[in-house]
Image 1 (cartoon, rainbow, N blue to C red):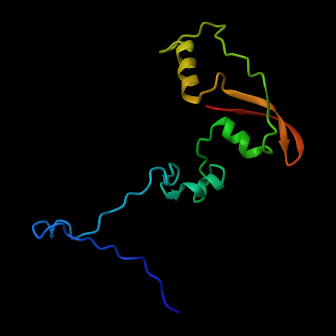
Image 2: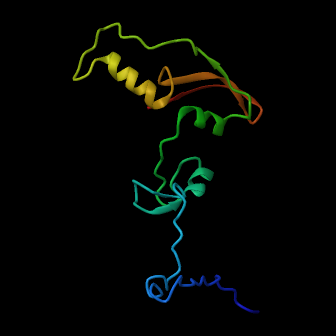
Length: 138
């Protein structure tokens, strides 16, 4: 059986003057986001493999951040999620103040997560069984 090898790219010089500068094939860049570096074990891993494992490193089982709505999509039967309490908003009844006010922190987190609250709660189906689910996004 004949072994297959990758095709060899050849470059053609534009002129004799720049032949030495163009004698190497142009490098192709790796598409952005194709590979991830695991913060747990520092391994370089294929993003699609992490996606197949629902956000878990195949080398060390580090759990990558997964947004709440994505986690719900991963867990529940397609199209079965019915969100509850979507109209509820976080408030600051204690008037909490730190280096930043609670209101400022809340606004920053809402922009970052695109959620109005840290919890997404509702009902759906998991493998045909009715479930109630709450997922936090922090």
